[in-house]
Amino acid sequence: MPFDVYAIGHALVDIQARVSDEILAETGFTKGIMTLVDEAAQRRVLTALADLPINRCAGGSAGNTIMGLADFGGKGAYAGKVGNDALGEFCVADMRKIGVTMDVPKAAAQTGTSVILITSDAQRTMLTHLGVSSSLGPDDVDAALIGQSKYVYIEGYLFTGESTKAAALRTIELAKKQGVKVAFTVSDPFLVNLFRDEFWELIKGPVDLLFCNLEEARSLTGKTDPIDCAHEIHKYAANVALTLGGDGSLLMHDGTTTPIEPAPVTAIDTTGAGDMYAAGLLWGITNGLAWKQAGHIASHAAARIVGQLGARLQDRFTPQDLAELAKM
Image 1: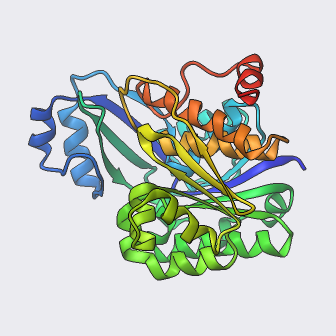
Image 2: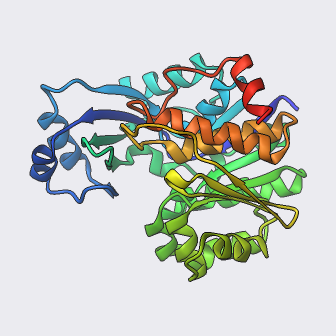
């Protein structure tokens, strides 16, 4: 297969800045969550950051994952819509530079952005202006690329718009028709509250691998204990990856629970930790590793992201690193 994973999501340019609690309070946004904002609000926040150092990279949840997979040496393709503007050019170039195939045509509109405000406690407050990424639709999904992939990977954020939801469902439909496995990430607890029934339909139906964190799993199942949550989801989803923050993660595969220990790290920025965990696991299972081996790599990849600023690996894993982690 030419591709390990075909991912689809909101194509955004991530703009990260470290801020004080005082600056964050002045924005008026709630700490630690993702808020959708309009263009005017995003412009006000960017103006407030004008004198601070910023880090910029192509992003979005599924975008982070597919670039993480490429960082490991995997082969990825990505469906995400950007504008015919400077940020759009930057986003596509950033993707292609790392080896990701991205061929969705640019649109005559503004590229989406996600401003990520990081405070000293490593909490990240995300202010997202979707821009033209919200117009991604079924016609932007490439059946041929999906057919050449081992997995498709879909972010739950796509369910917030009718057009993007249709694109997600079309991706799943084309994958199933061509015998390609489906991985789905719940993305955010607020999405579970909005789309619980729809997500359960996917879990009970076409989803082969579900990614979620503990808060999302509790919201999905109504249970509290992590293992109870994982078992409940695994009744329906063939494979489950449940992340537990500083307590590691749980993998469910073939009826077996595999706990994965956390990698020690001093947290600086939690942005993209779940995205990178998904990248590590998907790279492992599409490149011949056992689930436990892939889980070890995913855990260490997430820890490396948490220990730095931004959602892209600044210190990449070498083939020797990956070989050592696979022995654990």
